[in-house]
Amino acid sequence: MNVYQEDLLDHYENPSNYGTLPNPDISHEEDNPLCGDQIRIDLLVEDDKIKEVRFSGHGCTISLAAASMLTEEIEGKSLDEVKQLTKDDILDMIGIPLGPVRLKCALLALKVLKAGAYGITSWPGEEDGD
Image (tube, rainbow, N blue to C red; front, side, top):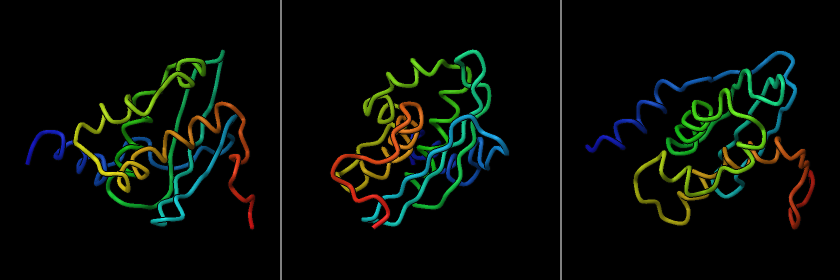
């Protein structure tokens, strides 16, 4: 098993920042209807910087490990820095090649984080609660 796979499994089995914040400044939740993964991210923001971050939810190894890695990466960063994160940043964190289905799993946490940071409540083309 390579180092990236071991790191991925460690984040899945021992996730960083798992849980919820009692009074978050930003909280957003999304799911991947294709596979059933669901991620929520809570942020406590002070002076435009992420003071605390937590994530919760359920899903596959890749979606939960990516959420854990992402929360480690963003703590202490500004909301502007968070808004600049890209798919490539997540793929670099994960470090293993992913097919199209697994890519959606890996990017779910980034989608949730960006939606929260930008204040997006629904995505164009997606039904809202129907």
